[in-house]
Image 1 (cartoon, one colour):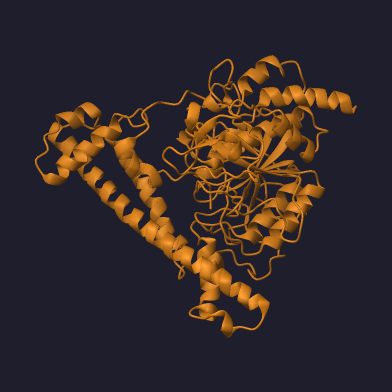
Image 2 (tube, one colour):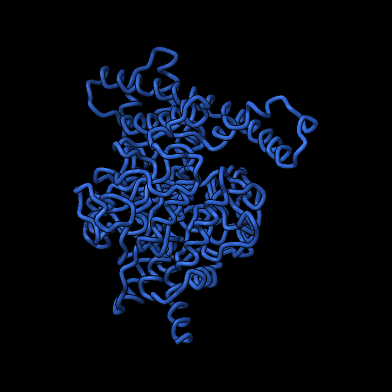
Length: 537
C-alpha cells in the first residue's frame, strides 16, 4: 500500500480539532539552526559546503505508482535509457524490456492496459486460504505447515473483518460529508450569486434547513483554515478522500475483485521477470510524482519547488497500485532498477502481510551485492513495527539482516512534543531515522503541486539526502552511507519527551521510537562524509 497519509482518514476529526497553523514554505529543505525548523538543511548545505565541489550524476529508482515524466519540474531530471530508441517496439538494449525509456511498469499488460486498483494483501490471503481453513481447528490438520497456515488464516481473517468494518464506516461518513458539502456549495453560490465560496460567504449564507445549518458550521471551520481558501477546495479534498475509501471498499477489501489478469503473467511463478509494459506513468501517478519531486525536482530553476538532490536522474519503476503491492512485482522492480544503474531506491510503500517474502529477500540481497541502497517508508499506522512487521523489511526470512536497507519515520514541522508525526510508525529496533513527512509541498501530475503527508514523504527526503552523499562521494558504499546518515543525524530531541504516535498526549522519550534518536541532516552528513572519505584514502 502506498504510504501516503490518506487525508480522508482525518478529515472528520479535523472538523473538531483542526491544525490551523501553516507550515513554513519548503520546510523540509530548511535548517534547524538558521531557519528554526527541523528540515534536513539542503539549502544551507548547497550554499555553504557544496558550492565549489563537483558531483557525479546518480540514478535513483522511484518504485511507486508511476511518475509523470513530462512534469515541468521533473522532465529535466528523468533518467533516459541511453540504449533504447523510444516507441519503436524493439528491445534495443536487449535487457528484456521493450521501449523502457524512463523505466518500467510491472503492473501493466502487453496490450497497454494497466492495473489501477488492487486488493490488500490480507484480501488475497483470505481468498487463497478461506476454502481450506474456514471453520477448522488444529485437530483437523497433521502437518506443521498446515497448522502454521491455519494460524495465519485466523489472524488474517480477523484483521480483514476489522479493516472492512473500519473502511465501510469511513466510506459512509465521507460520502455523507462530500454530498452535504457539495450541496451546500451549490446553494451558497445560488443564493449569493457568486462563483467561489469563501469563509465570509459562508457566514453571509442564510441557512434555514437543518442540514444546511449543520454543514454551514462545519464548512466555516474548514474554510477558515489556511489550507482551504474556498469551499470548492474543500469539496475537492472530500471527493479525493471518498475516492480512496471507495477504492478500499470496492477493490482493496473485495475478495471477488482480482485485476491480475490485466498483467497476463503466471502469478504462481515468482521468478518470472519479463512482463508488464513501458507505461511508467500509469493511470494515477500522484503518489510517485510527489515522491520524485521531493527527491529531485529541479533546483533553482524558478519553477515550482526544489527537490533535496541536485545531480540526480529519476528512474520510474511502477509496481504499486491503489491497494497493496505484490511481492513478485516489488522483487522485479528492485532487480530492474539495480540492473539498469540505479544506486539508491526509494520504496514508499508497505503492508502488514507478505505473500512471498523470500522472493523480495532475494532481490534485496541482489541489490546489496550490487551496491544499491534501499530507503523504505516505515508506514502510517502509528504502530510499533518491532512488534508488527511492516513489509518489505530489512530482516531476512532465513536469518540475518540487510545492510543496505533503512526504515524512515516521519516528522512534523511543529516542534516540541509534537515533533513526531501522529500517524508515523515507530520502532526502537527497526526505525533507523526520522525525516520530514508532514505537509510536504511537491510535484503532482500535469504540472501540479500540492502538500501531502506520510512516511511516504519522509522516505524520499531521506533518499534525497543519501543521493547527495553518493553524488559528491561516489565511492561510498550503501553500508557507509547508512552509517554516516545515522552518526551525523541531529540528536536535538534525544532525552526529550514527545507525543507517542497514535495517542492524544502520551509522552515518551524520543529515543524510544527509533533506534538512533536521530533526525536526518544533510549538512552534518556532508561534513562527516568529507572527513570519512579523507581518512579512507
